[in-house]
Image (tube, rainbow, N blue to C red; front, side, top):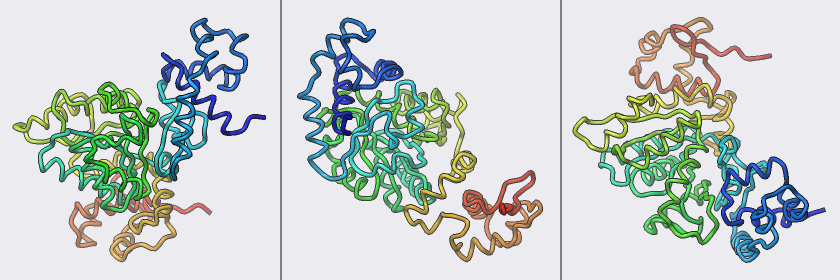
Amino acid sequence: MTTPEETLRCWLALFHVSGMGPVAIRALLETYDPQELFARHGVLHLSEPLREALKAPDWAAVEADLAWLKGGTGRSIVTLHDAAYPALLRELPDAPSLLFVQGSLEVLTSPQLAMVGSRNPTSVGSETAHDFARYLADVGLTITSGLALGIDAASHRGALAAKGQTIAVMGTGVDRIYPAAHRDLAHAIVAGGGALVSEYAPGTPPLPGNFPRRNRIISGLSFGTLVVEAARQSGSLITARLAGEQGREVFAIPGSIHNPLARGCHQLIRDGARLVETAQDVLAELAPRLRGLIHETSEQRGSDSMGSAEEPLDEEYRRLLLHVGDETTPVDRLVERSGLTAEVVSSMLLILELRGLITPVPGGYSRTRMRN
């Protein structure tokens, strides 16, 4: 009987076979397990080049990966067949066979929103990304981005400001922080219960081709991708395109017609992306998929702003809930009765909906009927 370390050694050896990408590895794994490939390669129906490659695995690279794994705390290598592998990412035909992780494993399977945009945003763009991420992280979404300059960094920092979780998907090994100026930010992500994630082995330098390729992981981990600011040729549009191809939601924030960094977002909107003006717009679109998921995440991190229906509500939320009846209650009536602005009421209703306390119905909201 093979040990977990022996099994992982075989996964790593397959990962390091020259010329074998995620699609080819996945195709092999549909028929064989990694141990079988190395133990019986001589009698399996394999191409001659692959059979030769399996005869002499790159054990030096395997040992280097294992040395990294054992060399510090909070390090993990997750295989495509592991329970800890994110289910949404596994849906991709070119899902990575391995993920190298520094930080929390649990956060990988939390409900996520990808946020991307320009590396040279306007000050308004940076503030918008920060504020959206802070709000969305505060209600339990994990913010996933790429640790790049600009919108990526603002999004990570916004999530951290809410004491929420954030994931950085890297185009380098997780031990090679790029850009180097974000070393402290990377440490804060891990310390805050988030994670650094890469499909590249530790020690991999910042090669230009790696960054567009990792974008499929950013979108693949997430229920949707929000583009904050992007020029027409921005790499962020690659992430948005991949999200659409993966069947995920694409959101874009519009901007001034005089701002070149708004043109990519405007193009996405013309192509069918959801136009959003507030973070509540994103939540409203994702609410049907998040219901039941976001509760658990918020309870795990002890959030006061979200949680199960049994957790105590803030006084303002309790007062608003009192105005929602078993029959349909129009939103304008709730605004009138509560004395709050329409924008505040809409935001609070989304939170109550995500907590399962109210249900959207034609013409407004009603109390959720509790099951016996």
